[in-house]
Image 1 (cartoon, rainbow, N blue to C red):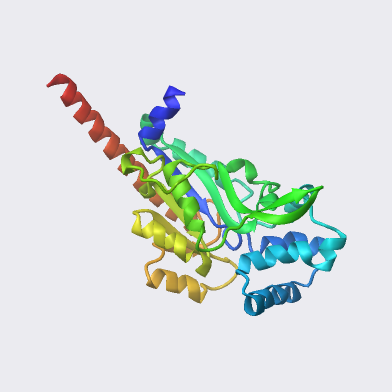
Image 2: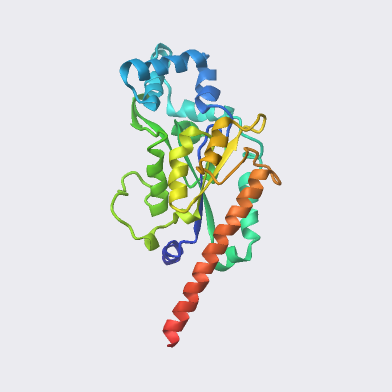
Length: 297
C-alpha cells in the first residue's frame, strides 16, 4: 500500500487514452456486433436514430440507445449483457491491435533505463460512445485499466434505461477522472485538487482518436499540456477531418491506424513516450537533489 501511494505522488504513471470506433477498430462496434446478429440494416437504423434527433430533440447518443431497447426487433428479442459480451468476439481490429501491440509497448517501456530507475508505469484506457458490455467482452479487455462507455440498467435480464451515456463533449469528464485518479463514478471530480497531487498529470497523457467527435478531448489535452494523436483507416487516404485537426492544432501528429511494430504510429508513440519519460526522470531527479540538499544543509 505504501509503495502504491509513493508511486502515485511521484506522478510517474503514463496513460494512453483511446477512442474505440475508428481508432482501435474499423467501423462501428454496434454494426459489427448487434446489427449482424439481428440482421439490421445499418442505414435504416441510423436514419431512424437521426429522426429522433431532428424531430424530437434527442441527443444523438441517447437516440441510438433508445432504439436498441424500443425497436420492435429488440422488444421481441432483448439484448442482454451476456449476449453483448459474446458478440464482442466478432469485432475486427486494426492491424496489430490484437496481435502484440500492448505487449510490444510493455517491452519498449522496459528497455528504457529511466523506466526502471523511477518505476514508471504505463496504463491504457478507453473512452467510447459505444456499449461497455460489448467492450467488456473484447479480446483486448485485459489490457485496459478502465473502460468508460455507455451502459444500460437491466431488469430481469433486459435493458430498461441507460445508466451512463458518453458523448463527444462529456468524454472530457473521464479525462479528468484519469488525471485526478478518481476512476469510479461515485467519486466527485469537481473540487479543486493541486496539480502536484494529481495521479496522472495531463503532461503524462496521450489521447488517440480518429475524428470530429474526439475534438473536445484533444482540445483538453492540448490546453492542459497533454498529447493528442489522430489516426485514420490505413486502407484509405487521410480524411479531411484529420487534416483539419492537424491544421487547427487539435492533434500534434497523425498516422494510419496501424499498430504493428515499425509502423508510423508506433514510432510516434515511442517518441512521445520517451519525451514523457525523460520529463518524469528530470523532475524526479531534480526533486531527489533538492531533497538531498535540504537534508544535508
